[in-house]
Amino acid sequence: SQQKAEIVVKTNSGKYKIDKHIYGHFSEHLGRCIYDGLWVGEDSHIPNVNGVRKDIIDALKHIKIPNLRWPGGCFADEYHWMDGIGARADRPKMVNTHWGGVVEDNSFGTHEFLNLCEALGTEPYICGNMGSGTVEEMSKWVEYITFDGESPMSNLRKKNGREKPWKVTLWGVGNENWGCGGNMTPEGYAENYRRYATYCRNYGENRLYKVAGGPNVDDYRWMEVMMKNIPHHMMSGVSVHNYTFTYRWEDKGNALGFNEDEYFSLLEHGMRMDEIVTKHAAIMDKYDPEKKIAMIVDEWGAWYNVEPGTNPGFLYQQNTLRDALLAGTILNIFHKHADRVRIANIAQLVNVLQALFLTEGDKMLLTPTYHVFDMYKVHQDATMLPLDIISPSYSRLGKEINSVSASASKDSNGKIHVSIVNIDPNQSVDITCTIKDLKNGRFVSGNIITAPKTDSHNTFEKPNEVELKDFKDAAVKNDVLTVKIPAKSVVTIELN
Ligand code: AHR
Image 1 (cartoon, rainbow, N blue to C red):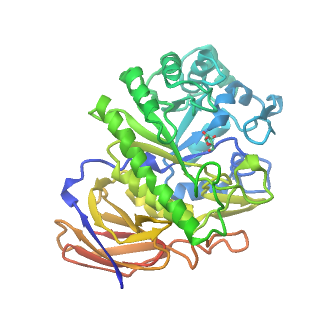
Image 2 (spheres, rainbow, N blue to C red; image 1 turned 90 degrees about the vertical axis):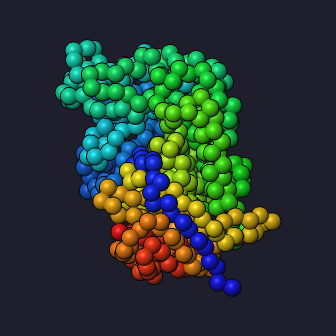
Image 3 (cartoon, helix red, strand yellow; image 1 turned 30 degrees about the horizontal axis):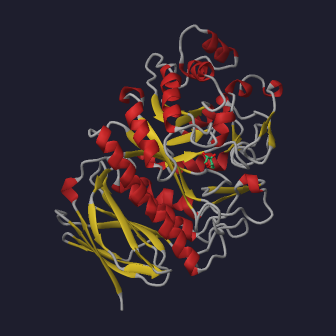
């Protein structure tokens, strides 16, 4: 029988903005993300802007990248920022112990990163080193970057060629401090946070938005301690990290060549983001009912076994239509929680985990996940319109999940965008979507991401196997949108 779903969009009850910052990205000194990914150096034959690949800069501007997190990840708590300033030839080399034991020559440092953010028109989101760094080191980094007056750090910055400070507000105080960032207890971290954050000063107009290193996945006790032990005026957000595996950490599954059970399992696992965010949000609500403190999911995405023959410490994986469906599903979940989730960063930008770009020499390809960020950019800073869904189910492995997820928003020009993901790999679904109070609604345009196979993907030989295409299979009459969503696809419809 034909699959059917019903959606009711509550047009007049939109209270919260979908913060553009949930479309943030993450670039760590890991594998080929920075070196051989973003950074090729000014002398490269690959077209670049101050040493960063121009093709990637252009593609990131196209999707309106709102923020970029750097330098890690686990690398952040081993990074000593002073090693990455001054003449490149004089910068000390270090070993990247966490990621493959390779030599890090520090040629991409504070200036290179912040100049990249300026070229992108995006907000930097810096993660400071609490695990192996001192309060003084973190404090001086903030001073070096943001202080406009006369001081040892601002003078050093000027000596290194940057007269005016940069504007940096998003500031992480350590990363995964329950693990690679120092193996702390939540109480120990909270105590340290108070010290480190105290000396991360606001200089002039620059107001830091300080983020406490939060829980891993469902560590609700960690969240509880953050909310209880850190004075609320000292933090703007608490981070949460939640990756998606096919099965579990020890058995992540493969990015390519998976069977339908594995396809199902990965997406079923991804949907748990809703439960994790809901439960953390309930704890935050208890201590902060006015929702002043944001939940910041600054690491999320699919994490598979590395591609055969690649360095296991480099976390290089391919990216398929399944990953696009996962991205659409999780972004719909973030939209639903727009009241609390205000920043998110998919991991990672180039050549690492659920990347938007893969590179090989001078070649670069856009992954299916990139196209989701392109399709969904219309939701950035739009008002979230709550909705109800009655979805058909998709069952396997003795489990049942909804095959359809959706989200909707209204932008500042009054345009409504409805994004729908159908994860059922075999059946299309007829959707009746009532958009309450829509008068004389008109279908403006639509686009779709789908492909012949669940593991269809882009290669350097065939870079356009999965891409964004126009979608017209929709009609609007009064306040009802009817649309047929093909199997395994993500669709966004624009109405006004
Ligand atoms: O993104 C890869 C790693 O995952 C990050 O460095 C760390 O924060 C997390 O464990």
